[in-house]
Each structure stands twice: as C-alpha cells, then as structure tokens.
Image (cartoon, rainbow, N blue to C red):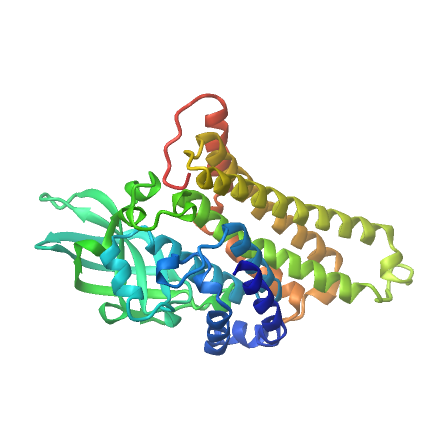
Length: 388
C-alpha cells in the first residue's frame, strides 16, 4: 500500500507544482489537491486497517510527505498534519473512532494542541470553550483536535487533555496572513461552550505513556510508537522536503546559467558554487538518513513487541530537530549563492526559503530544548516531556 501511495502521489506532483503559486497567494491548499491526495491514499497511510486504513510503516509516510513538500511546501505541510491525525485518533476511545470514521473513512481532522481551551466537568463529559491558533488545513476538515485544561472546583487547572470536536461545534476565523507556509490556511478555531462526551477526550499524559484507550482495539505496531516520535517527525518531514525541492530547483536553474558579473563564465564551473551544492546535498542527505533510521528502529521495536528505550526516544528528538536545522542550512546556502535570481516572488527557491523558515518555528522544532533533553539523558538525569 505504501509503495502504491508513493507512486500515485508522484503522478500528482506536476499538477501540485503548477498550483504552488496560487496555493501561496490564495492562502489555502486547493480543494482539488486535497481530493487528489485522498484518492491517492495519503490520509489513510497511518489509519487503522479496521477503518479502511493501511497502517503503513511510518517511514513510508514521511517519504510521501517529503515528495509532496518538494514541489509545494504548503501542500506538503498540510498533508503531513492532516495525515498524522488518523494515527492519533486511533489512540482515542473506540466510540470516538466510530463517530469519525463510522460513516466516512476519509474524514479529515485538523488540530491545534496548545492547551488554551477550558474544560469544565459536566455530566457524561465536559463543557469546552476556547480559541486556538495555527490549525493547518482546518477548512478541509470535518473534525478538530484541540488542547484544553481541565478546571477543578477552585477553577484551577488539574489536567491537560486533547479534545476531539466536530465541525458543527466550532467556527473558523480567517486570520492566516503570514510570510511562509501561506497556503496552509492555518486559521483560528473557536468553540463556545460546547458539550464534549467523555469518549472524545484523552489525557496527554496517557498518550505520551502509550496508554491510549484505542490501543486496546488497534493493536498493530504502528500504534505502539510514541507520540513524541510520530508527531515531531511529521513536522520535520515537510521541511526536509522543502529543502529537497529547493535543491532540485537550484541545480536545474543554475546548471546552464552564465554570470553577468564576477568575470562572467558558466556558474556551474565556479568552484564556490560546486562547494555550495556539495554542502547543501550533504545536509539534506544527513537529515533524511538520520530521521529515517531513528523512526525505522523505533518501529522495529514495536514490531517485536518491545518497549521503546528512552535513549532511542531522545535520539529521535535530537536528530529530528537537527534535521530541521540541516534542511534550513541547505536552503540558506542555496538561497544565498543563487543571488538575485532567488528574490523574485513565486520563485521556487524563494518560496522554499520562506516556507522552511516558517515551519522551523513550530514548537516541535525547538532545537535547544530538544538537545538539552538529550544531554540530560546522556548525563543520567531524569527527562520528563510529552514530546519524547
């Protein structure tokens, strides 16, 4: 299934590339692109087989995301975020899964995990209110996962939850007008005093500890790997893909370019340009090789039914944030050496530069925090974080 998805996606890439500029300008991925990705099976790759999904090896999913992102960063980012949510929904109570997929196995879910919502206990569940930012692809989704704090008797937070809400319970505020990843349509979600039944709420701590209720029915190895591995790699994969696309565009554009300054001559014969290409290519390769290796090792532990070692979880995060840094380094090298040719709006190099830098500010790409956690672990200190 995963190879078939990759083949199907590659056939779509020329059209997605043609729409890249309008995606950026219109601030949303065209519905046509989303429909094509649905038909290609992208959003079912991490979905349980019992609901028509593929339960693919996650490395295959990230490969697909990189290919999409190479031709359009916003489409790749949106596909990644919408595509990882079926994996997370599979950790929820079975009743919640039935609500979403029972009538529509192709239902899409957006998210905004910051715990800015307020959950007040009520009979059979909670009352939810809040406003969440940065919900990528939300206009294409019929459900959303949002973060919330459970308020105790004194009105103080007592727990952190991820909450599943249907489209009928929230509105979308069109506020997304940014420098990079403009086409992701990462608008705000607003909920005003909606009732949330208990099966649509999951404790973040339980999810981080691999104790989601959905794991009782979704027993495959895909659902026994940590959220901190699956989600953070989902955020880095598009950034790596953007670097791949930038590199391909750069080499194609610059191979036959003749300089009009610095003594003229073919750009490709300039040893400094050759070194720049080599450095960029090496950074991209390192990013892909390390992230794929770590996710593959994690998945293999799950296949064998083994616990995921803390040391591996920390290495995943170390190399995941470094992969983002490496991708940015590659793009920055290419952007700088392309000169004025990289400045015109809509140029693939310019767009990759904007999109990758925008993606790098996501909380999952907090480099210093992730590296510090790895260092603590190496020194034998306790590390507690929901993203490991």
